[in-house]
Structures are given as C-alpha cells and as structure tokens.
Length: 219
Image (cartoon, rainbow, N blue to C red; front, top):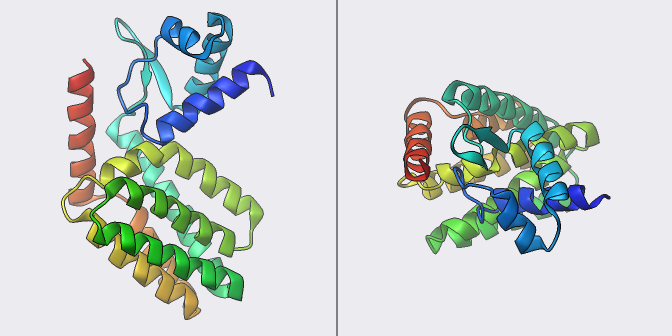
C-alpha cells in the first residue's frame, strides 16, 4: 500500500468515526504537518477520498468532509435499504448457529448502550450488529457491497442517532430484525431491515436539518 493510500485510509477512518465531522475543512498544510509528510501524498489521498464522495472541494472553502445534496443522500439510503433487505432475507434462509449467537450478542451490546443513553457506544455497536447481519447472509459479494455503502453512509447514520428517541426506536427495530432472522422468516427479515435503514418522512427531515446546521456552522 502506498503512502497516499495509507493516509487516505486513516483520514477515511476518522471521517467514519466522527473525529472529522461533516463540514470539517481538510487543510493540506495542516494535514502534512500532522502526519509528518509532504503535501504531495496528502493531495493524492484527498483526491482518492473525493472519488468516494467522502470529501469535496468547494470555492472559498477548500476541501471539506462532504455533505451531498439531500436527494442524492436519499437515493443512497434507498439503495442501502434494498441491499440490507437482501442480506436479511438470505440470513434468515442460511443462518448457522455461530451467526445466530453473534446476532444475539450484538443485539445485547446495542441494548446496553441504549440503556446507558450512550449514543457513541450505540453507534459502534450498531456497526457491529449490521456487519453480523451481512456475514450471516453467506454471500461474500453482497457483504462487500453492503460494507462499502455502509461505510460511505456512516457519517449520516451517526447523525440519525441524534434524533430524539432514535436509540430506543433503533433498538426495537434491531430486536425485530433478530426475531425475523432467527425464526427463518425471510420476507419479514427483508421488510424490517428495509424499514430500519431507509430514511423518509420525519426521519429524512431530521437528517437534513442536522446536515444544514453543520453546513451553516462550517460556512
């Protein structure tokens, strides 16, 4: 892996983890000083990140952590919902004991974080929960597509958890997902996962409102 690729991965991880929030400016000079490298690999890393849509360059603002147009974001969430629905349907059909145990363990971890009201902990456990669902579908290509889009949407999924009562709602949805997969109900598993991921109505309005507040703060 080249130096630029390693830097790209590090910056991407910080975006996904929330250490570099939406709207954050990415200054080449500051990043070069921070990582102890020249500006060339930093520039190459930012170009690679721009290709994924995680950052973009705007006039008078430079390179920032990207917040796409609402309709584009909605399209990405719709696609993610269909991918996760497929994962859930296949998981319900192909569930093996080790994946069932992992699902229940991941659900319990989400429950502990939700009961503590710890949004950040819940976000981390939520990621684990979904990756277990992907693995349980036993389709590596589908898993890869799900992980890639999940990673792209991670900053926005984090924002969703800021909405009032979202932790409680999300946990209830996780419980329904596990129940459907464990019972082997393919149609139900697909239905509850699709509804869990897609953003529409009030959930979409809340997400856009959070994005706008971030953009205004960064302007």
